[in-house]
Length: 81
Image (cartoon, rainbow, N blue to C red; front, side, top):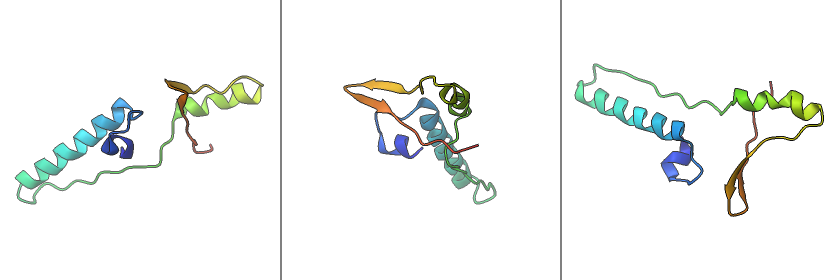
């Protein structure tokens, strides 16, 4: 969500959606005079689709990443399973 907050061009749509939901929850809590409590959790990123590549890479295949153009790519440091 930090990428969306900064307006980074590589922020993913789900990050914008989560940020919007957090804003809506805050507005609802303010309208309810404190009777509506909420907690927004921002866990460290874990992408199951990335972990699925482990077998492919271990077998000598390529690691898939996203080309953003202009010699830029989306990199990640996934959590180890």
